[in-house]
Image (cartoon, rainbow, N blue to C red; front, side):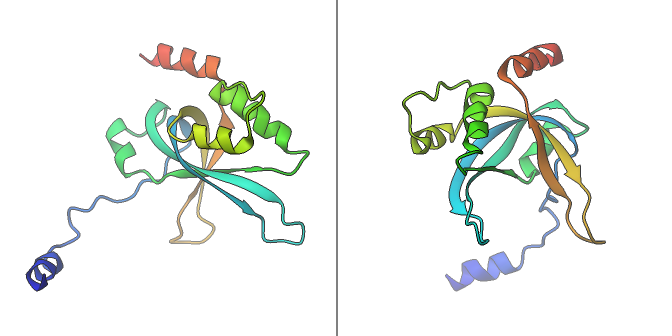
Length: 153
């Protein structure tokens, strides 16, 4: 075991690629995970946050091979009673899922592994040397996304 550690410690970081923050553009993402929680404030607003891994490019300045080193994008839906309308529309319009009779738990678990299309905005770092923040600007409706992919091909 000591020999293995010694060999690893002799490696350099020269071949480790830099991470890429997605530039503003439109991408195909795979939902890889979700978590449920409460906003840590006095209202304790419930939310669902999911992880989006970029797997394709619709319109961007980067190349497909850059996606391998791209940071995932995180997005959140508030799950207060009034905000649940947005979650319902997200399932119906972005994933094309009929939500009737299905629990939110089943819907979110079934969303993991699905591909969606979204436009993202790259927000510059707040301080020098900081990292930019990539935010979902809007989700593309299924019909529009399919048309764009067909146009790009």
